[in-house]
Image 1 (tube, rainbow, N blue to C red):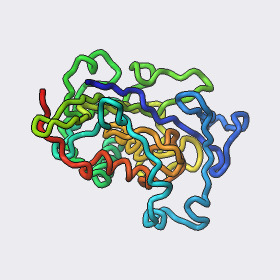
Image 2: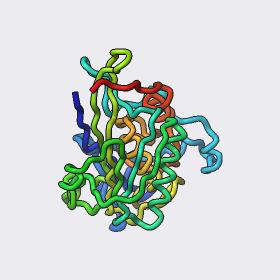
Image 3: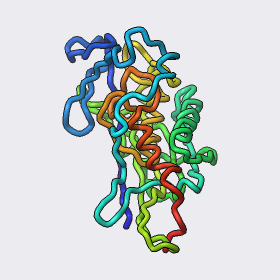
Image 4: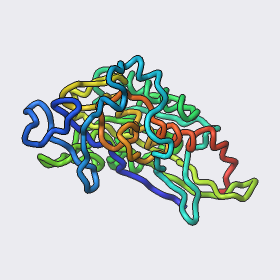
Length: 284
């Protein structure tokens, strides 16, 4: 059985004053309007400084224990009646290629940093295999053999099927990620295993003012950082879906926060990482 999961997205948010939810009418011309969840309900883009302590600094926050609940995670390919949850085989390398054509300055360094953070949290081994001309959401990508790879690319909104141009006043997607899972029986033990066979990350070029790195990001305007965005989308690529709490990297709207994994993020990454054990040779 083969399962496909596409279009898991991170929605952009913009705050004019950190710590407040801005009514649409009060947003300044330099800050985009409040976003909505990519499905149906409105999200609140407020940032509560008390979540980190009134006098916390980035250096002290990094040393604190992960925030939120360790139960706050979900899986991209959860277990079903006829299949277990899907994951990459942690005893094999996960290869990745990048299409740098539309990459902002400094974006490749942030991407490498995000891969390193996913590795540290999950134990998965990522091996860079160079550049590619493929762009997820295009006909060329759909017909290419990308088994065993995560393909990462940037593209203008509307140039692919994955990130359309958002009508004025509607949510704007910062990125999308998805993958393909196959369920087969173990050749030696006869048990069912579901493996992620390939995945992609597509990032929008519509956020040139998004801060680079993994720090707090902009105080005004677009919230989050490129590092936070990369970690979020790579989290999807290795098997995580969205979290409920705003302290998690996998929360579906960008927040004014350090790009540190939350307790739920870490629990989910352990579940899809080396802690789950190797996948044996699978029957064809």
